[in-house]
Length: 378
Image 1 (cartoon, helix red, strand yellow):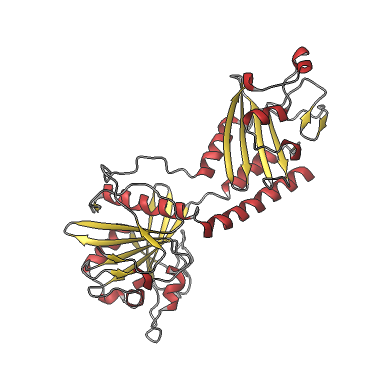
Image 2: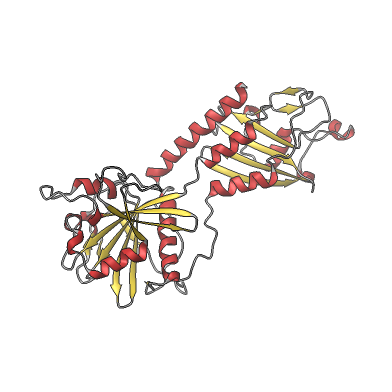
């Protein structure tokens, strides 16, 4: 075992029987990206608002003219601010994209499952939106929703979702030399004294880039005056940008035992990689103190392979890809894809931990409220 948990808040991820090291075999799309695709495919550009419809609250009541694509907004409801897109598509199915503070739902219901009043059926009138909402879910507060007439709203909804898509990641990378086992020791290592195995591992992660004048994702590193070091490690993977905060490349202060300048970056990374030269000296995990670090991946050389141990803070849900027993990855493309996939999904899973989930919910609440206020005020 290359880790001693002690009194830390972390748990070691258990291996799964029959799990294998593979390349990426599942969709990497985030939920917000899936919402964007579903909205574009099923709602966006389909239908327009007819201004001669008489609307009371969210109900189109007097004419048998039904919008092909309707958007309903609420600045306040039992579920907080909401934005709902509704469409009656060509195959007698109602589809809705429910955007609420805790996330989105993509719902569908057959038109035959929608209950409507006898007199509407008698006159061949479509069901009211509130009847469709009731058939879709019991958790839609239709009395709080108002039909929005703003033709710019579809674009506003897309922009709102786009703002929640994460396209870049920053991961911490720390080096533990043989005989070292604490955070203070690994933060005190310098690039001049690292092992060839660690340098090879950095090449495995990405390419070493010069920071001054760097034009791509910089992850908070200074690209003008070299205040955060002269070089770092960067890669593009599966359409995402990844910048690593490498402890030995960040500024070293000989008068600071804690190396707070390095800690300022790595202590704020959600996922941190710890490279151990020697698995016989296990890292004392309780020595790592950070509110932000939620996933720690310990990597140890094992011949021509890397042995991996994954630890997640309490509250972080289980995330793929599953780890085999023993968890050994090659230094080739498949092993690298597996490793980076685990890092990316580790950060995404951490967003669901209590410390992050509330912040994300507050951000989404603000975005929904601003969108609803603008849409209903136009």
